[in-house]
Image 1 (cartoon, rainbow, N blue to C red):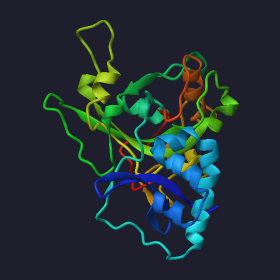
Image 2: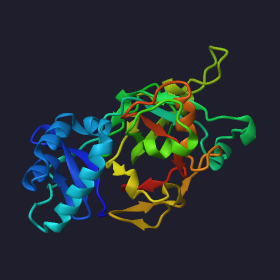
Image 3: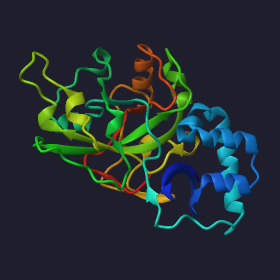
Image 4: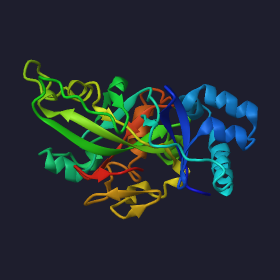
Length: 287
């Protein structure tokens, strides 16, 4: 199976899905039509955008892999999209879930004392979907914000929704992985006017506080995502001093937060749990 991913670019004033291979970035609609993939299915999936593809991921995933194979085999039949097109967020998550102090080193860095694994569960909070921007867009800092921090996180993108998902089946519901930059106003996550100490939503949900992407990489291509480090990784490069750090609760870290949330409410297609953090202030060029 060749490496491939999904994304979105602004092409001729229209946000359009793109397919990515090691050879370049291509308009997905054009490639699917020229390579004569089943027209009715692709027309339906493309009409729903990336979000529609995620909701039909069981069918889309093998079709996308086959399309990528044919695209690579076609040689230079297609010209990659030029630099004149604008890179957008790969999709608009319906809900963004994140976990606080989700690896030991980060908790220590923040001065957080974690309870024993047997006595604790993931601390889940949400970011507003309106905070999502593309990976190359500017982060706008509100005037009242005094202390801004950022963390690069590995985000799991849900394909098949579900409820009461067992840990051993959790990864079956992950369609793809991407990168999200969790921007935080640290001074606004703490409250003194209420008996509740923290207000994670307020400090993390400003407009532009969630740069996302650029790509959605199918989970079938992400071998052991928690072992990623600063070594080169096709088609881009991971840059930074350390690997992705696992959650203190989970066997594969993706699983427990997803499972715990699904015990309370249904996890729908397009939802984005961000259960795994990169080393603080690590920079990655692309997933």
